[in-house]
Length: 326
Image (cartoon, rainbow, N blue to C red; front, side, top):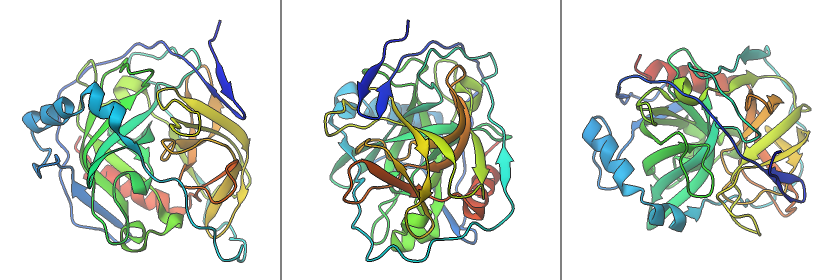
């Protein structure tokens, strides 16, 4: 029987998995491409995460005490001055299929593909949500732009680590350390919420020292599918009565909130930032098609917004995949 914790429109869950192995690889930095930007991942003291020793240093940094003390990166945004003209979908719809891990997956009803992200931010530590993303090189993790970079006037965060399937302090499949981080230049330059998206390129890790998608599987990706779609939103809300160490979900149909953003009924709070909005979510496999990520909410605590996934997310995906080592 599944153990479920409910709070309004959300529920928390548990898991069982089997996994696979491989060798450590290192992601390399690259100059910014049009519309996208990247950096080599770094430790808090500025060391580039380009060696097994640096990967181990990030893992050692994230003690249980530091994880527990991490702050929830901001989910609240000022209300827009007006609803504006509803954005019209444009571009040809595209899709990348999800993938099971190499040795199979058995999920009770918490997605092992979704997990927590921890980063070092100026003056402390922060936490978000994220999900492994399927690609040919099987190294990508999708999250929000504000989970890797502070936006206008700020810089890249350090000590980026992904803990898939995190539950009540446990890391059932281990941890993965980023080698490179990517996001949209519009997020870096102007904190544009339409572009609040990021993809991290992960070193091998986890309990089998393997690629992240080989270990836990990867969500699919969809873009240009319109503003009204049915989604399951997954994440780790950590304020307002939510514990921060359990995975919750919301389900419903999205609409165009304002600008190039989608909106949904969901009362998840800080900590859920970067969690995926999934079409065709399968509770048995824990997989679906990412169609946005949790970005922010305005004054209504029962609604949240995410960037509309159009050609920009495909551009970022291709950019990150191009930077990823084999």
